[in-house]
Picture 1 (cartoon, rainbow, N blue to C red):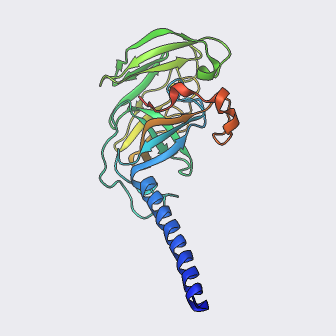
Picture 2 (cartoon, one colour):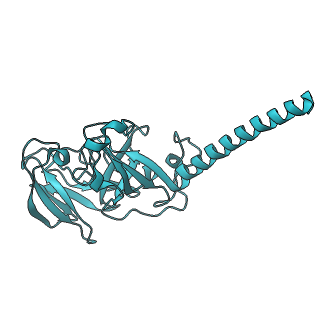
Picture 3 (tube, rainbow, N blue to C red):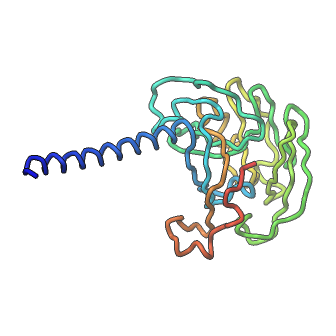
Amino acid sequence: MSVAEKSQKKSGGLGETVSVIVQALLLALVIRTLLFQPFSIPSGSMRPTLLEGDYLFVTKWSYGYSRYSLPFGPDLFSGRIWGSEPKRGDVVVFKFPPDPSVDYIKRVVGLPGDKIQMKNGQLFINGVGVPRVKTGQIDNPDITEMPQPIDVYRETLPNGVSYDTLDLNPNSIGDNTREFDVPPGHYFMMGDNRDNSADSRFTVGYVPAENLVGRANLVFFSIAGKASPLEIWKWPSLMRVSRLFHFVN
């Protein structure tokens, strides 16, 4: 084999490797933009439904696509393409309205046109109290992030979606609010950890439809103790095996 043939073969091999890498990156970009996006839970605002250290998939097609479906949210278009409304009770990842570079995850409790209010810790939608039944207490700091037993209330929305909420304090600042009128094209979000959640009652405000990223769907990994999933040696003691492949409700 001549020197020229060897050089051509070597060049072809390098070109093929680069081509495969580029194709893999493009495929990953398409999957992340159109289908699934991994997301990690950074705080305890959605306890007990989601725990800090949960890693989940967000379905990007659930509500259509906006500029925020793309990496870095480039201002290429406004509104949503193939948009559909979230259902009351959906757990949604969205861009924080005051700073769209930040991702938030909360539950949709108010739809456009709704009137939302908290009275003595109970959620009211359009003047009607949402059924709230105490189911007991959780005495597990990994779930509650608190060193004492915490009251758990089962809340059931008008469309039948039911989930647990934590009540850390019966007289917190968020337990009694003014009545919020959700404007057209916006949503009212709340965390399930009602006394420890920055949500639409406070700094989040009403969330524009354009800011929705996707619906939280499946927990594929979970680790306690604020450990990194890359710390494999901690898996035997800190991995939450019961939460693996757990659907988000």
